[in-house]
Image (cartoon, rainbow, N blue to C red; front, side, top):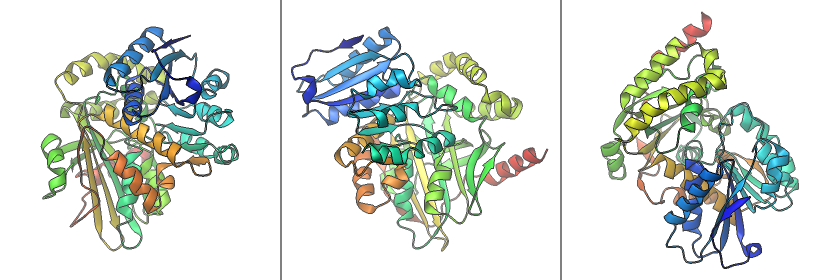
Length: 434
């Protein structure tokens, strides 16, 4: 069952992209950017999901956004009962040259879509926007199978994680010697246009351990996620290319959240000190409320999918109401400090978080098709460790429509941690010992 647009070129001649979660806000953003970037090519996009009504709306949304494309691309919806069922998702993978998996949450799941892409008779490229560490570890174990089938696979291929991982590697390349400390800080106004599933994913994260490095070793903080870490400047002082970020974002409150890059990039760089990852939102009252909820609600409750989903559904109307008065602005700041105390920072900002994630995922997918390598499963910091590949993808990621600014790697006098990070770590330690 599918809903298709009119087309003029035989499907067999087209590069075919299958997007699971294709009717969601991120899935349609990926599809839109793919069409705009490949407007001179004839491509086929399949948006996979469970709801026919949403499927038709998603197809229409993508076609409207790309109404100026010259080659009348094929965009269609196809039904998939369960993206986590191998037998259901393999037929989709067999239609794909590139399989793009955006149907989260990924927590407590096995990498079935990745397994289907590897097993497919056709698919040679796979990307997703996964983030739980357990999911990533299970996916990386499939690297030999992917290499045997010559399928090139990239995990965490969004904005954060994704672009942020690559920017961290770029900043680290400017450090003379070994990296000591590594920090990721993110900002999104409201939901950033990403859809209500992002609320559920955020809530689930509060029940997960925060994986980050402490004195050169990986540590799982059981009571850190969700704690307020204080303020972060999402701009670089006297840096013209971050002026828009300073005006649109400025200095914001952030809270700890278990982004995997604070562990995986730190591991790739073999840092000798500490790492951290945090995010903030607007209006600032949401940060305060989340901090209070995390203090009140037992950690184990957040682990229950039904509880996190209930809380997401309960708060969704109020969040959407406030979002109506907010922009979708997104920003990130990545700081790397060397053992020699040299500090390098990068700031990137975009007018829409949802669009930035979709654009980033699409650019990673296009890069895999153009530069496939020998197959295997990798994280962004692994695939783009070399200067040539890294700067090739950075040039694409940081020049997408809607980008407000990108500073590049800038040597700064200091790269301070979030203002209350030490206090939050002490609180987390005390809670663990209680």
